Amino acid sequence: MPVDGAWPPEVDTADDESLPRLESRVAALLGALCVACGQTLCGHEALFNVALGLATKPRCASCLADGLAMTVAGLRDHLWAHFQRRACYGEVWRRVSEREGFSRTGLPACLWPDAGRAGVGELLAQATADSAPASSPPTASSVAEVWDAGGMGCGDLVLELRLRMDKLESGATLKLVARDPGAKEDLPAWCRLTGHKLLGQSHPEYWIQRKE
Image 1 (spheres, rainbow, N blue to C red):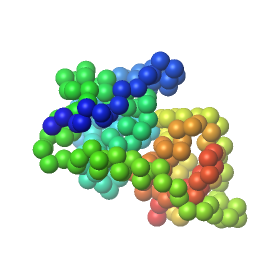
Image 2 (tube, rainbow, N blue to C red):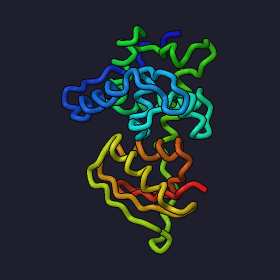
Image 3 (cartoon, helix red, strand yellow):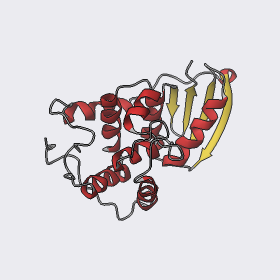
């Protein structure tokens, strides 16, 4: 079932310096096997793993969803909506779809095989929810660790963030300083997907509490 022709939008990527790097990372995972079940990843699943900082241990959509305590439909819809708000991710998604024989403006049948999938409006509503401001940040005394990530962006940021969060005790709070413009959308989405809680944000500062 094709998506309305007005969405996803075509974007000018000529000045998007992160696009070649992102596309290269996705290309490196094409044909890779899920480390959990051994299934071959499609290009869209490869992009999922890069976005979540899991490129070194990629998983198929089903195993990703299991690990995040989500349904496959919830995971794919959530990530698709998020990608459409980022020029580089949206463009790589469309290129992957085209390479695998799907329409650039449709939802690929490899992940949306049924006719009853969520509509475009619902998916975009999820993306809007990702960028909603969080509550006020905690006091400095309640912060267990402070990490200044500088201008680190996209996959590098969430990969390092995942490692740092894993080292914290349950319920502990990390104050992150992330100056990459995309962090305003990437970090709320990442927290929602992983189960960690975004306690507050005021770019470039973010307060993230480790899940219990």
